[in-house]
Every structure is written in structure tokens, then in C-alpha cells.
Amino acid sequence: MVLKEVYVVVYKKIVKMIPVEKRGTLSDKLLNYLLKTKNEAKMPSSMAHCFLSQWQTGTFDDETGLAVLLEATALVELEKTAEFLEKDLQLADVAKAVKEAAA
Amino acid sequence: MVKFGVEFVPKEAFWKTVYYAIQSEKRGFDNLWITDHYNNRNVYVTLAATAMYTKKIVFGPGVTNPFLVNPIMTTQSLASLDEMAPGRVVLGMGAGDKTTLASTGIEANKQLSAVVDAIAIFKKMLEGKSVNYEGAVFKVKGTKFNFKPRGQIPVYIGAQGPKMLETAGEIGDGVLINASHPKDVDYAVSQIRKGVANAGKKMSDVDVTAYTSFSVHKNAQKAMEAASPVVAFIVAGSPDVILERHELEMDKANKIRAALKKGDFGTAFGSVTPKMIEAFSIAGTPDICNQKITRLLKSGITQFVVGSPIGPNVRNSIDLISEQVIPHFKE
Image: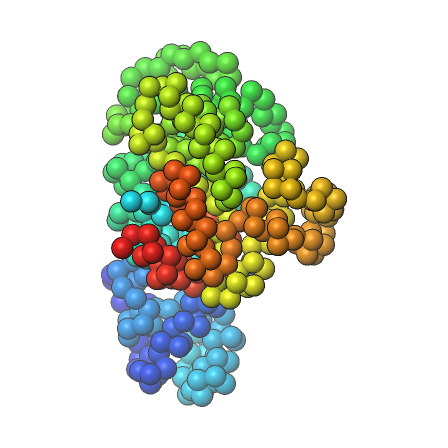
């Protein structure tokens, strides 16, 4: 749990910028990016465990879950994530924040 | 009531397979089977991670073989896993795929004896005593763990041929029938019955499991397209007698075999016919799949395993099975 808290601090702030009605769509898309990524080597083991721990005990639809998912996906599929946020969800400010956090 | 199992091939990073394992538990699956091939991620590493992130799903290798992994090491792995997830571990043991084993330099001879020996050693070693055993393939002398295993672990035997099916019914707690079509499953169950009778057991003592190639999607065509690659490999690996049982055209089967041998996957997958998909998979909408599962249950199946590919999108297909397939049989 300590691990999860350390990871999600920055991304929790980003998630607060996302309208609640768009979070479900985002969560679904991010899970597809993550589970189909070929960039598995970019996922740190600690983040992988954080992701699994969140899935075991909760969901990826609430604030904490979406923050974990957003960080994990930004690590392996940053461009796709940013593009989806900007073009599909019309959240350019969120896309910019994710790019800055992942840099 | 029929149990539902799911099979995953650990060909990707551990966190993806474990994600699906957690999802399967959350969505109501009873059993989880992880395949064991040297060219994928290690089955026991994957199962250990699964043990840590799940609470109730029953899991095991589906299937390992005694040629690549010595039965003593298989027993050690399962006994260790049983400490991590008490009472949730099962062994799936088969003879292995001769072609894959050949690529490792292993000649898989006396397959039936090897499986019988492996299971005998497995059961004896789980008793925690010094084991002496002299089989046709495996021999152990004074072999003993420095720890006390928790106890016996159910053994499922992966079987396809008549003798292996009969033996599986005789000595197994479960049988993993590698088939999706009633013709094959009916035949398999008839062989299992012989073995069960030989052992003086009842059919209810054996978990008769259909280990199917499964693909579900709301659009039947998409489900069938996803099934094609898996079916191509099944066609290529099936003996002619099985292809004849399903009245499949040999020239088309041979075309697939030749294309796969050359690594021409496009031709191989594109040559799969609807009749082949019908013979070697359960593919379609949830309603179509439910009808086919219902037919298999009439054969005497007690566990139904959704195996590769599961669907065009594994995550969505697991949800679909949870919403529209499992409740059809459990509510």
C-alpha cells in the first residue's frame, strides 16, 4: 500500500482534472493499451506490482485506480495515451500534464 | 454443477497473465490453467505470482510433461505452491508435444509409461517419506524432501489417445480432454469410463474436463476469425484419423501443415475452413457457445475450460463469458 501511495501522488492530481463522465472510457482504453503493449520492458517491476495490487483489491474506475492505471500506461505507451486524451477526449491540458509527469 | 476453467499461455510479461488471472477469479471462474512450454515464461513463476494475487481460484500447470521437467522437480514445485495457496493447487500432467520436445533434443518415448511413472512418483513424494520407485521410464531411489509437503494434490491427466484416456480415468482425479467437438468428447468419455471401471471408481470421482479452444464475441464472424490461428495449429498437429473423424479435406489440411512448416502463417491461417473451426473450437456469439457447451455437458463433462484464444480481445471476452455464459449454467 505504501508503494501504491508513492506512485500515485502526482497522477491523482492529474486524474482530478478529468471529468468524471470521461473516466470510464479512459480506463477502458488504457487497459487495452496496457494489455496489448509490446513495450513490456518499459514497465518497472515495482509498477507492475502496484498495478496488480490495485486490480486485486479494487478497480481502475475510481480515482486511485485510474491514477495507477494512467501512470502504468504512460510508462509503456505515452504517445498513444497522450493522443487519446487530446484527440478523443478533448483533454489537451491533461495530455500535457501526463507528458510532463512521465518525462 | 459444472465448473468453469480458463487457460492462459504465459507468452507475455507476468503482469499481463496475472491481470487475467485476477480478472478470471473476480468474474466467477473456478479453475485456472497455465500452459507449460519451454519457449514461454516459466509456468511456476507465473503460478507463484497468481497465488499471491488471488484468493480462491484453483490453479495448476495445464499441462506439464515429465520429459522436460523431471517428476521430482514437478512435485517440489507443486508442493511449494501448495504452501503459498493451501488447497488451491492441482497438477495437470500430460505426455507433452513430441514436436516441441524434439526441438529440445528430448525423445519422448514410452509416453504412457512416463506419465504413469511421473504420477506415481508425485503421489509418493507428497507423502513426505523416502521414495523408492522403479518404473519403465523413471526410477528414484531413497528420494525425499527436506520439508513436509502439506498432503496430496489432485492430479489431472491431459489425454487424447485411447490408452492415455483410459489410464487417466483409472489413476487420475481429473482428465483434461483436449477437444472441443462432441464427437471427440463422446469418444474420450467412453474411454475414461473404461478406466474408471477398471479402478473400481465412480465417474463422479473424476473431474472430466473439456479443455477447449474457445472464442467468443458478440459478432460471430469476429469470434471465428480469432479462432483461426489456433485451429490451424490444431489441424496441423492432429493425426489423420482425427481429421477423418470430422470428414475434413486432407488436401486443405496438408496445405496448412506445409504453410506452417515454412512459417507462412498468412497462408496457413487463411486456409482454415469453417468446418475446421467447427471441428476444433467453440467459436461464436455467447448464445452459440452456450448451445455447444450444453451439448458437451450431455457427454458427461464436469469442468469446461475456455482455452486459447478465448476471443479477439481476451479482457472483453472474459467479461462476456462472465456475463452471458457462466450464468447460463450456474443460475
